[in-house]
Image (cartoon, rainbow, N blue to C red; front, side, top):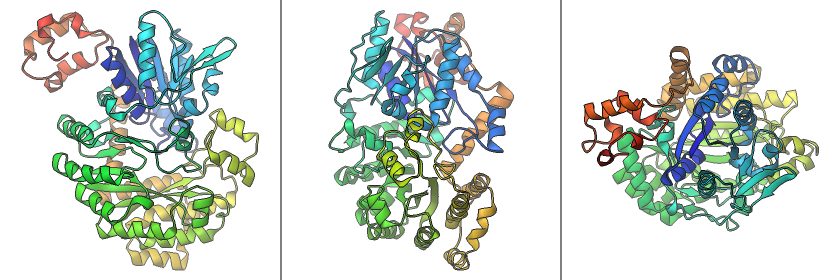
Length: 558
């Protein structure tokens, strides 16, 4: 079976996990990657000037569709979140209009709202929850020439609706294959930012987060973890293979299990020793945790603060931390010189005035090691507790819920569900000030606060200003995360302008492979990844299995 994935903007962890599981069972996988420059819904959204024009200029969507068609897959798989649903449907529609190939959606949005994609002519199957096992079982069945409609986690389109199969028990993470990072090696510089995951699940269940929906799969909310030695082995190997300069842990809270983190930190420092970024929570970031973060080489910790209005945070967002715990967390990180960023949400009810925003600015201004304030705008995602709350507060109408479930959520970088012009001006002034504040000396921060000079930012264009500030901070701090983003944009700008952008190089030339194989004598001397570019192109972009062309006794590295 040949399975082609399609992703946009950045490497997709779910796609890499499913690809690894499929390859382990003998299936072929490939990816049609859409860089979606200026519209990747990670930093930019291409809905306003000048991003809309730039996104159109650099669009690769039609080429992505053509690449999928040219690869002649047996199955097309697309991971979807609310922000990328419209893009995913465009890709599925474009493929289906040319070839009759089954298409499966997975990911957060597909799990929460499986009825939405199945109601279109373009999607045949939806995977709910984790996809490694169900995708393997589906592809095994398809390879046998049949479709097993009883596979747990899969929802199949039927003439009279759909057939829903309940999710299976969650897998032990140590039983999962290491993610197939190689899948993205032609599209992203993996060494600049290697994504990894040591746990799944979260000890907190915020009302605005889709993670809250996942409680149906894990009632205890106790995160599952990979064993320390297993994750360390993966990272040590990746460091050698990709010359990794930054590891990015995508765990909701890396150190929610103190015993695990005590074992992890010294082993990471000794065997890996590469700067890393991760996410955390103030409740579990005590003095010991801050020390371990520092000693293990944490470059930056991302903290979800969301608001300094304690009552709102606890009652509306269902986050238990007190302001005292938040301040203690800041103090602990400052003490051990660990950089950190804070996520802040604008637009919460009962927080529409400037008082809470000003008080938050004061708290952030006191911080020594604060590296960035990530500014977001309240957005309502499908099936989260926030939907009901937003209706009760009058921030959205009951009929809006149907639109949200259809993939029409507002975008959290672009004012979210805030519509009042006066609030947009207020939020814009604070968003720009929050972002530039870490670059200022403390005295300047408090001078601007005392004099209210930050109000002038209300008259600046938000998206462009935030971009320019981030660009300045990138070079001021030589920030590896931002450099990775810039590097990806430069890589794809070069590909689009000089090399035709997204394309499929076609099936491998068997005679040429055999000639290269013999000429360079790579078997039994060094692995495929060590050979020069010409051979790598031939071996890694193959459309057929090299085993068909290589003598049986020469298959050591296949």
